[in-house]
Structure formats: C-alpha cells, structure tokens
Image 1 (cartoon, rainbow over the protein chains, first blue to last red):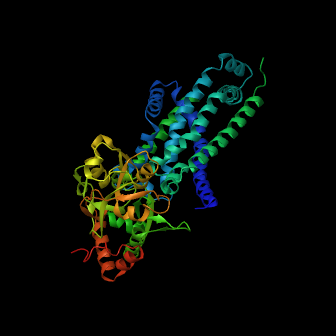
Image 2 (image 1 turned 45 degrees about the horizontal axis):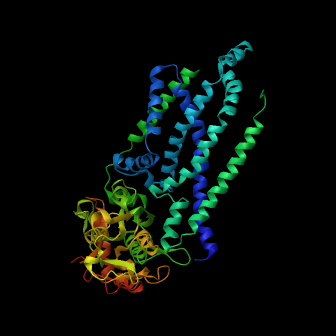
Image 3 (image 1 turned 180 degrees about the vertical axis):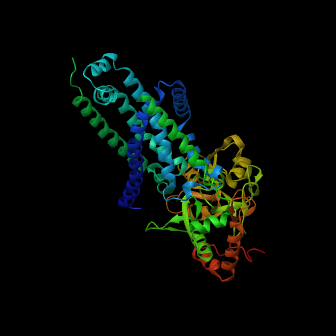
Length: 220
Length: 269
C-alpha cells in the first residue's frame, strides 16, 4: 500500500472521530445544563431521579453503556432499531457519548452555578430583572468563566474517549486502522495516529487558553 | 420557573421511555429482511474470504458468495465488520443477520455452536493450522507445551491452541490477523488460525518470515453460515445455496479464489 492510500484510510477514520467529537459536544453541552437544573430542582423527588441517573452513568464504564445502547434494544424489541438505519452504529455511539458526557458536564455546571454568591441574584432582583433574566444574563455568564478549566479537561478527554466506539465496530480511526492496516502488519500508522491526536488536542489547548484570556475581565 | 422546567424534563424522559417500548412487530426474520430490502453479513477482514483489493473494493470468496445468494433472494447484502468475539450478541440483537465469514461448523469452548446459531448447509472444507516463525524449533506436538500461543477469541483455533500449550498460556484477540501479527512481532510463539487464511497470508506479503508448522494437524472441519436460532432465513439461504451449487456459480467462484479442491461436493445432501 502506498503512503497516500494509507493517508486516505486514516483520514477517513479521523473524519469519523471528529464527527463523533463535535456532535457529542453539540448535544451534550446543552443536555448537561438541563440535567444540572434537574439535579438542583427544588422538588426533591425530581432531584433524586436526576442524581441517580448521574450516579449510574458516572458509575458505570462507558464501554458498558455503548454495549447496552447498541445491543439491548434489539433484544427487547425483537429487531434492532440501529439495523434499520444507515450509520446505526455511529448513532448508537453518539447517543452513548452524549448521555455520558452530559452527566459529567452537568456536575461541572452544578459546581459553577452553586459557586455564584447569593448577592448576584439579589442584585438582579433589585434591578428589577426576573429570575430567568438574572440567571441567563448575570449568573450563567459568570459560570462560563469559572468552569472553563474543568470543561477543557473533559473536552480533551472526550477527544481520546472517541476511540472507545470501536467496541461496537464504529469505523473511527483506531477501528479502521486495526481492520485495514494493523491487520496487514503495519505498525507505524499507530504513531501517525498519535500525531493526529496530539495536534487536535494542541489546537484545543490553544483555543481554551485564548478563551480564558478573553474572559478574564473584571479580575481584581 | 425552575420547577416548571424540572416537571417538563421528567415528562420528556417518560415520553422517551414509552416511545422506546412501542413498535414491537411479530414478523419473521425473512419478512423483516424482505421488507427492509437488505440483510447484514457480519464479517472480519481476511483473505481469501472477505478482504479489500488494491482499489479498496471488498472482494473474496464469501463476499461474492453472499452477493450471489442475495441476488437469488432478490435483496441486497450489506457487509459490516464486527468484533468476532461479539458475534452472537451481534446476531441475536439483530445488528447482523448472518455470521458469514469462514464460520466453522463445530465447537466453541467445548459447547457446540449449534447451541448459539442455526447453520446452513456447509460449503467449504477447512482445518486449523499452526503458524510459527521459520526455524522456530517447534517440531513436534509436545514441544508446544508451555509456549505462548495466540488465537482469535471464540474461534476453533483457540481450542487447539489451548490443547497444545495449556489453557493459561493462550492469549486471544478479536480477529485472526491480530493473532498472526503477534507471532510476526515475536510476542507469541505460535498462532492457530484457519488453513484458508494461512494459505493466503503466511510466508508471503507482509509475513514472509512465518510458516505453516506441520508438527501437528488437527482434524478437518467445514464452513457454514450461522443464522439466528429458529430463523426462517436459514432455509432461504439454503435454497439459494443449492441453486448456486447446481448452476455452477459456486464452482466458478471457488476456482477464482483457488479453493476448488476444498469446495464441498453435492452441497445439501
């Protein structure tokens, strides 16, 4: 196999990896916020339900969740919903990743929201803002600043966690590499893949540093 | 506001769960496949059964065989690469409809595979062979005792490797080619894989330093296609296989991939 053929194979796999990464972020970031509201709900039973969900998702391996989401519906329904659609494996992996990461994100959001002093809410009330306005215009903006560092941690972990999708045979970069290159006895593409990830995470790190600098106003 | 939001969330979740449990059908396997217009073949990539040619097309004896059967049945076939140890879960959950990848009719971990799947007619002869590095010094059956063996997890080769080296000396991998790589890189002493694959890959191409070791020859076995237990798809495939055997399509295919000596004569009798 020529270098350009190998490149093409790896880029194809890396495309799937990137797709999984970005789509997970797009869905998990808002879902995480919703879950954090749920686990902070004043109505106790609802808070318990959400905290139990977070406990289960954070307490079980992502690999197990991938297996459950992809295989169990087929056993329950008698036909696998993921076999009926194109890209069923990818969709199953995406669902598992979104749920898993939303739960981790929700705890980061919760920590951020609960760290905002009561005075901020009172100031909002004094200014005549409604509770919703106070939350979205005053509190959430400050939360974003505070949770940037732990978020960057999770996001970088997500880049590398995408390779777990291979357990349900999603054609991400490691699976593709194993099936078409490692199986031919080629070892060096593994290191080449390492460079892909290193560059990707490098870009993310620079991006997060930039955001942190941009958001460091009002610092005393 | 927050309270309304949380109630809304709870309702949404309930709706999702309900949605997931509706739409149960009582159709047979074949009706499902016919309605959908295609069936999934679970494969792993290896020569000469399912592999990619220079242009990147999936070819191989089993690939073309499955395509021919699909054509006879009037549906399409989609190949999906699976992790071999997960094959029964893939099959029973409906993620694939057939295990069709040089699937040996025989035992796995001492349990007959007929416990897990319904087999179609067998179509090709195979046996397990031992692959070692050239000049490995492993010249008789006893010399394998205590050596590091590798095989594909849940394959018939695993049983042979465990018999030779001892159960705790055998490491299993998700595909046969992984096992070959272990021997090539020197991290294992021998691999037990399918003869058909060894013939295509050992001693040539990327593995010039390996050889098929003649110190021990396990009994011969046959390949068949594995379908879900109780599925009516098995009979459908059998019909098509018989037709393909009679009109000579199978013989032509076997010759194309150099398997003419291993094709089973009078399939289905």
